[in-house]
Image 1 (cartoon, chains in turn green, brown):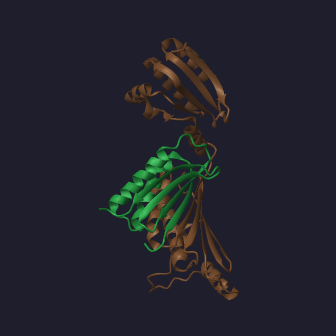
Image 2 (cartoon, chains in turn cyan, yellow):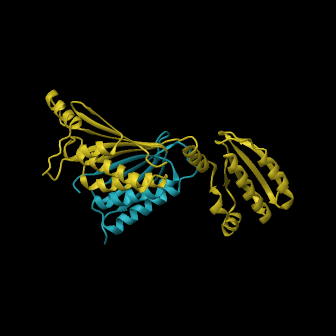
Image 3 (cartoon, chains in turn red, yellow):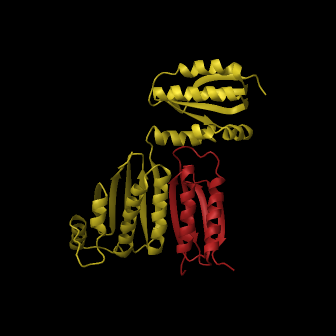
Length: 97
Length: 263
């Protein structure tokens, strides 16, 4: 990948959406050139970020930034749209050994 | 464990929801108190009874049976019923008894409110994406839109229609929009009755004539019988209930509305 790319997602905080969000992170990682194993890790990290949320208010929006960096890593950042509070951040390496 | 108690009150966040709060060890001697309170609930199609089990240590089988009976009578009045926050040991027992197959159950009040407002208040869900303008990301978008719809009760057919629309609009934004900022934006919202999708991209400056040409493509999409491509707009118009477009010198936006076919 020649330059960093960021996907910014803002989504209603509904627990039912977790499987789709996880799948999206994995699909996007594959599209960005990650190997299947690393895409699977990215999916697991997205899952762990979301599961770690506790009692988000009904109607609130969550922001998930997926930044594919120049050194072939994916940085996932989950935050609250209205307060800007960052719930967590994870980095996944894109290349399988 | 505290002295067993049974009380009924309204939920502050949603007055049409009554909360039956149980605490302590609930046995056969509490059944009449529970049944009396539940049966006194007025007939109301939008009403809901939430049974708060967070402070319950033990729930006897006859009480579970009585709650099943309450559910039956409440459903005849048009009310629905669900369980809130049983402790892990009680949750395990209820699962063994198959209660989780009969009652909806929620881990937290927030989870309940989200689901209740979707079902009863027809609250919408939202998704906004800023995504690099690369065709490789489009399959991920398709899966995402489809997954969100399916998990909220849309049929496979309805989800497929929406994912086809997002596919066509995204590919158009990438291939024909040539966005100078190399990204495009998707705004998607849906509730129990309809879905609305907007795809927006920036574009190199269009003269008034070029803008009109783009508008004409949206108004009167032409499908050549021997062409392999170029059917996108015609397809979107056929699949959607409404399609509008906004063409400016540096921005193009297409908005599609799709009503539910199966409710």
